Image (cartoon, rainbow, N blue to C red; front, top):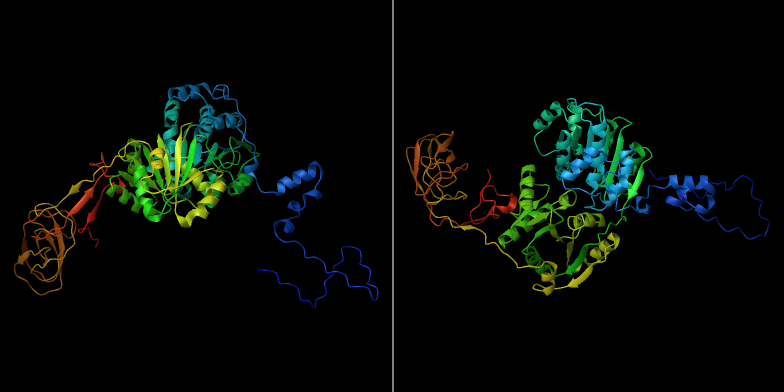
Length: 600
């Protein structure tokens, strides 16, 4: 509750130790005292006037009173000639790395490995695609291989926390070649899938758990995961966990681990969002940064295309139809789904990735994008971190992000590990100011071009012949299965939806003019009809009685469908991504047209 201002009639003492001398008669009244400055500087003397703080003690007090300014950490200079052996990585790990084709450390690895291998708590910042995963995986594996503790049921020995399922899966895929060579057992824990298999794996015993905070906390509460034997803890993309609201769960999980556990925190951006975790759980952490807070990539080119609203989709189609993998970002889940359907309808094989998809659909869509079945992935910011697919040559911000950190993480899906990449942001008239502020905060010098459809610049940004895949169009005849809504004029009491022949205890309504015959009786019972030849099932309401509907079409195996003869059957257009005929991937298979399935 805000403090009330004192009344003007209330006497206020303004003395500061010695009484002020009384004003002589006829003397001009003293100027009123200036109000004390409010705000962060006025309320916190330690951060107010720095001139009042002098000496080593004062400087230390001033530094301790300020929040952690990770952006001010100077980049670490590393020797590019160092090898993993020079950095102290055990010989067994060096051999496993060489077998995986990893021979030289990246700068973030060379900067942090000496301290992390020595058992110190480490804060590491490196841009996306800079090799942060191995920077924390190598000390983790080195600690486990030299530890005398044994694998026990429900007691993992190392913990890696990640904000998203995709990032957790990506981390496990990266370290699996090393853990297999060292005979270490790993598992992932996240929501969206059944908890039973995870509980079974925990009971068998694992060495490393890679988890999202929510589901892991559920296992901790039920006793299936006990964290009192954790020897090393890693927080990957901790600032993103703070943005997603996971800090309370992360704090409870870290409190369940031993106090002397080594803790490593890595992210592309370290800001004040992680300060509470650093102060509470890390002991004198060593901070390493191999680039600036904005983390620009020298081999990444940035372009802003100023387009009209009606040109946005044609420009997107032109860019995504070029050879190579393209990652398109939208701001909303609905936008990702809608744009994916539009691209497919226009001949661009695409899949979607967003939070409304089940875990199985997300996995299938990522596989389709990785193996080349779909050249374009349309995603929300769920794919901005942790998604590593080789050879993504183009990243398109179909919807500019709200904050600059999201822009950097989105753009970091290309130009990874020294490769080159192009980032394109589509900007309409009403987004000019927002995009200008966005690029300024991100420290990006983008080339702004106002263009129309067919501009030669599009060919330069995405070179190569445009390839369009004609969607598979299937015109359904009377003799083929169709999915349609009920609405015919069949005889019989009650109602029946669907097309096909039905026989059962309920009367039915045919779709498309089917005729039914049989005795009818008055009653309120509900009956279920069974397709005589097509195997369809229909549900009818009305009186009990035997009824048979005769029709020319074949029934489909959907609920509430029977059989009937239909005139003017609607056309069904089914499009599938090439190479995914046996297992459609997400929105790569959908139906459009007059006939659509209606849920009951």
